[in-house]
Length: 255
Image 1: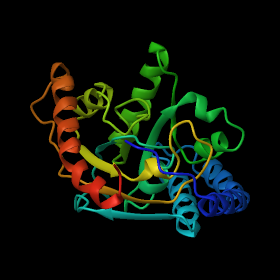
Image 2: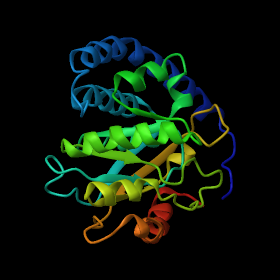
Image 3: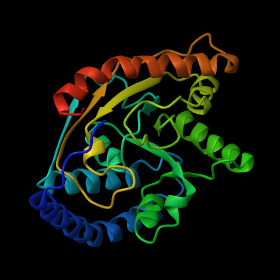
Image 4: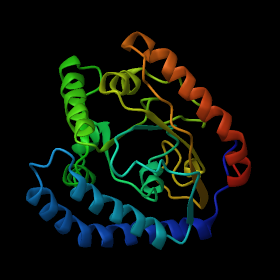
């Protein structure tokens, strides 16, 4: 996919967005901290997560260079029934886009992000679940926390590619999220994301002008499956998302 040319006006608006985000962090971080400690015994971390969603939606709506929208229909029972939600991963802006979804969920994220000075605190206070990639003990802890959350009726959000794609092409899906869904007996809810790569491309420190869409696709049941079916389920879900992307990319101007 080709890069868009540098635009000084967009860069200036991007600097404004940095300043706007910093201001909102100053407002939301104390509120999130209060919610986190007030609800730290809640296995769903629903209320802290709602504050994180409010921050993400507010920040992106106030940005003059981002236009986000949601398409598709959420499952009617998602407020009370847990799903393992999965999406392709284009950009660090993906979480901002996904805050527009009308339901609560906990996120799994690499542990390195929790060590960042400000973002790490927000992720902790938002109830996100850390994962040290490549360490079996951390994977076991993460899966146990995810299972506890699912058992209490709240969905889990994961990016099964495991990292952001450099060129926007879908990477292979890892089986972990799908093993979790099978073992917990909950459906997979696929999401297709397009456009966030222009918000902030991998390796770039600049915000860019972008229109981004997340499309909610039909749930995929896991009843009757075993863990041995996890990779086949991952491949099926990847194909479902891949089928939805060409139309979205045409409409978001991705080349």
